[in-house]
Image (tube, helix red, strand yellow):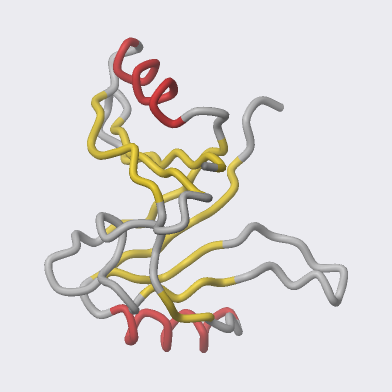
Length: 128
């Protein structure tokens, strides 16, 4: 396998309602705080979902967030060594840069977004 999917997101205009819904549907527990960047979610409204390793379960980490003015989307992030390089490659292959790179406050995570040639939004993530 090539580069792995490392994170997922569900973004909407009412993050609390979405967290309530997905919490009830999938028994997800959320750690609410800030997203990697305000381009992802309004400050203090991003609910992180962590994989359950205590029961031998798996899964990837994710988050539910957004706020007023954030477009509705579901999104997956692919782990890459360098977000800027990956965004340039996406553009070279016919995609379009949407946003980024963006670093979180402590510089430990960098994210970016592009659309593929058919308009699907894809996220990229790298350690900062």
